[in-house]
Length: 367
Image (cartoon, rainbow, N blue to C red):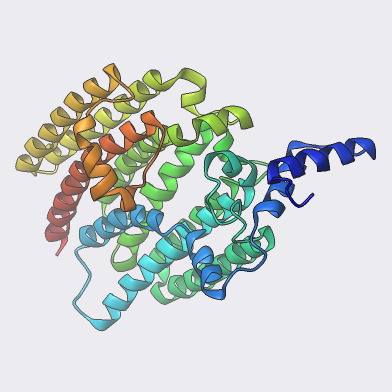
């Protein structure tokens, strides 16, 4: 038996189960696979790294542009130690704590899918047990709730209430997105709006409320980010299309295919830029409107190339993705997901630049 491979060992265990009348389910196979591949001893430093990795630090960045825009649009942050500490607290709550919590919960409840899609993640690789992962997101959640309550009381009034409600909404959506029985991610019609609210709406409103009353323009920008977030999560599901299909997840890529998924997402993105251009004109930022329209034109050119060739479109950007920004936006072996990463890098940079400009102009207006 010393020469038996892990795969053969699983088959023998399964045969023993059948002989003893036990059911050899896919779940038990996954658990046995974890037991057979998990190292017997993991160094303390590696364990800490695994706890950080399950919080997925790369995803924290996604909320920072909206937080920054909300603060800038308030026009009320002062160059003081107090305000800088408040800004740091804001970034911690929605980054490592809020976003990290949702990522940790996702890994905890998605073990079976990650065995297929991302076997190197901390739990399926055996670097963390499910119990350790449970402690991870429980502790992070407790810190987020306590910090949020304290900051809401510190700010006070309607602004404090907005912060408290926004953070509570984000944490709740972060949990039910992955956790049964709701598990919003099982259906794109529920998961996309949840992502749009979590990453685009509550971030803008919270950041604005941190330093001032809610500006009317910020509500519009939160709405634009809601729909942009929906479009991006629709395409991001390409990375787990195989596992989603096997696990019964109703992502748009599974239901209507790659080309149609690109088409739906591109229509949403283009409408966001079109409304953005109209708002810029209506607010009196005419030069910004021309920049937004130029961004829309560039996007459409790229979208046509990707729609014609979902796997290899705009391949000239692949080097920038794999070597330049791969550690920030991720890498993928799935052709359609790689195409999405190439598109998102160009689209997100243009959208970010336009947002920072409009946030600055709004902030100056209220100073």
